[in-house]
Image (cartoon, rainbow, N blue to C red; front, side, top):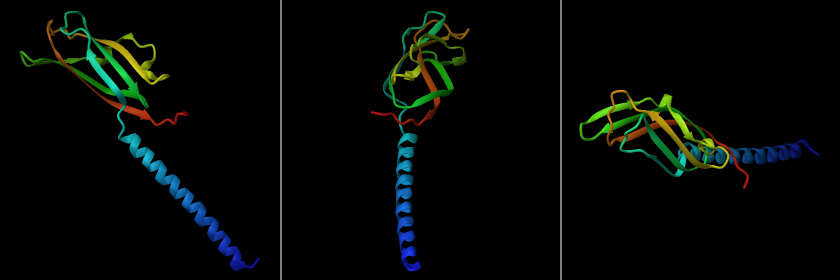
Length: 145
């Protein structure tokens, strides 16, 4: 085999390897873009289950399904009295789990999660509009079908 033939074979092999690596890079880029822009929960709803608030805590329920393994960070929640315009910051760090057999669907992907947040000392019984904000840190996992 001449050096010209060896050069052609090496060049062909390198072209094939380069093509495969480019296809892998493009595929991973598309997967990352889809993951980065994905909703954390699908068909999910979050609600306050004891509104009007009359007790020592505000109870939340989250139901739905999730596609990714996620951890909530920087959670912030506020209760608004639309009649008076008052805002009450809820201390989410003091949440109490009411029911969480499968935390955020880590095993099944199905979320059925309930927790309570203590009512602030200066908050009086009544009907409130509650907001809950959070950031998520998620891990892209590949599941076998």
